[in-house]
Image (cartoon, rainbow, N blue to C red):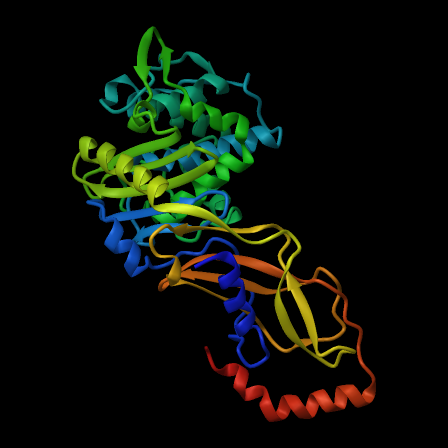
Length: 403
């Protein structure tokens, strides 16, 4: 299917009686994967989610809203809190924090876990702690930052949960900064991918650390634990994790040929399988999809009915170009609708958000984009408003049907 054919289908449903009456939605929703995509790709991961970063298109989903133990992937949220503190000026990269006995014993050399080998009672800068946490997945680095910023790790976990809500994570609960196993600590892959995309967008300078190959601290050289960085697939982030309950997991991001993908996998059996499956899903995405421009910036998408206005309809537009990653072999499975709560009531201002363009690939809702009024509509006279009121009483029931 071409973009022109998809436009024709969209226009055919944007009449007063062909609109699904729903509230305005936001971009990037969770979706079930289309049957056609299932046939093209499957993974050994128990949970998986692949998203194209620019358009927000969901390319593959497998139980993405199942709650799992995040393991070390909780450190993504730890870093978000730290980056937010830096961005708002509440601390600086030069700020020094002391290595407490709790941080040293729980997350340092005596713990047997991932560590940057911070010396007990030494002082370390925030800049070095960030490298330790991101490159070496350092548990001691996380605890040092948590205690330094919030006074204790439980207090820092409260900050993590507050920030998670502020940035729109739906099902994330954190109890520590490290991701060490705890039955109360849970997150979904949907939230992990959203968090990864948020960090790249909001903190591009700090994000670069995720691609750093190695870091040496206390004269101990360690390589970045993310296997994707050494697979020549354009990877630049982000992290890995493992717990006995959730298995091996990863959040990865790659950029090649102008396309950027973010994926999360969980429930894998080994670190080898994790690396192999992560590489497979990225390679599949680059080969199986291509970008289609559907509407230019400001182009009319459809028309919504208007109650009590000088005109009975108003043109709708998107603020930005509407593009979508579509399967190369299954374009005929594309369908789209404009959704709004209607009829709209005059007066209407120009550029007023009134609904959503929803695009499906097969049965999977792949993308949602807000739509806005392309013109202002003034209130009509008494005669026009009376006619519209009678018309609404006679036909309003029809909009309750879903087409």
